[in-house]
Amino acid sequence: MNRTYHSQQTCPIARTLDLIGDRWTLLVLRDLGRGLTRFQDLIDSLRGMSPNLLSERLKSLEACGIVERGFYSDHPPRAEYRLTEKGRDLEPALEALRVWGKRYAQSAAGGSEP
Amino acid sequence: MNRTYHSQQTCPIARTLDLIGDRWTLLVLRDLGRGLTRFQDLIDSLRGMSPNLLSERLKSLEACGIVERGFYSDHPPRAEYRLTEKGRDLEPALEALRVWGKRYAQSAAGGSEP
Image (cartoon, rainbow over all chains, first blue to last red; front, side):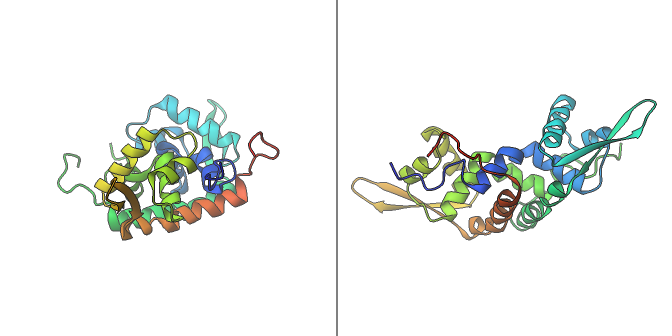
């Protein structure tokens, strides 16, 4: 069969989505790009994401070189997370999603949230 | 608490991801953007995606105005799917993911797939 136009393996979009292609990961990258660095600030921003899931996603992003972890306090040890260059280079994709969302994905008017 | 920087509701990235933010949906949009229009061609390209899931995603994309469905045959009825303008305007986001993937997400060398 030669009907497969682009295998998941050879397509750079598919390979990118293998690394960052779930909703929560993209929102974590959004918040790191906005300068949040501490676990607690991230979890406060990402309402609905469990701490365990955030921890797992940060480890995964660190493992593939998109996020680097440092420490802002030794006693007790407190981690901070920052985008690497590889991570910062995802900003054009996030910006494109933002532009599209502003144009086409309306926010719910008069929802129950403040 | 005023620590929530951007609620999922007000952030245009989050709203966009509510509509198209799962891996398969983005790959469906990629293939429609490349000119595939028929269900069978899409399912052949999207190896690993079940026909039921593709059908559900196409209906969802049609419901939010990203995809439009027409017919290329009446007897038997055969549907074809095309991006609307709203759908085509997601191309910059897909292109940004493609550029990043080419630079940073290496394809597996010598994998078992052809």
